[in-house]
Image (cartoon, rainbow, N blue to C red; front, side, top):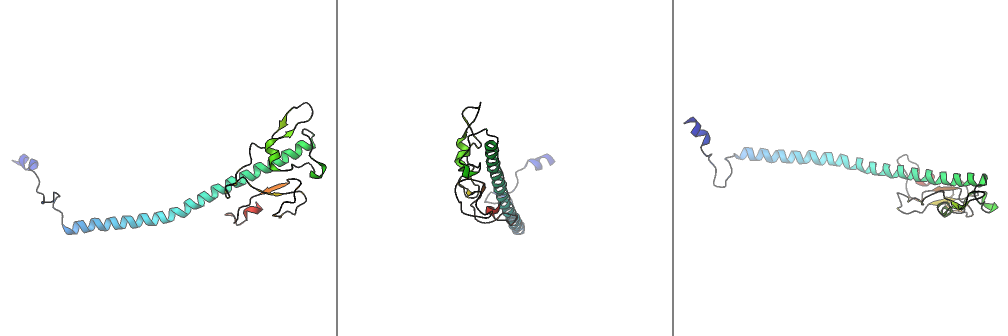
Length: 172
């Protein structure tokens, strides 16, 4: 008979659920409210951290792109000084006329034939989303925001605002 009690069907209400008191249902609802509150607090702390992570990633990409373009400008100048490529006009002082010259390449001198490229492509500014950069010539002041033309001595970002280090992107 003891076995029969274990196998006997349990008693249910008409709605099909087990017999549960109102206090037990209320406690479950309270647990749900507390859990949702804790999750909202955690989410509100994680969202700013994720936004900072995205901004940090864009800043790293900007720093890498600026370094890549500046190294290409320096490599172009070095190639002109070593007479490995056809020299630009004298007023350029050995610097390229534009960033496009670095991508298209410069005519090689001597035993080398063809052209020497210094960049595969002009990088896209991660903050503006365009491959457009501010340029400075050798005759421009260091903090100039307008290009005097003639040659490209330096590049900077045209993005508004500043980095996490409180320095404007145009000053990087």
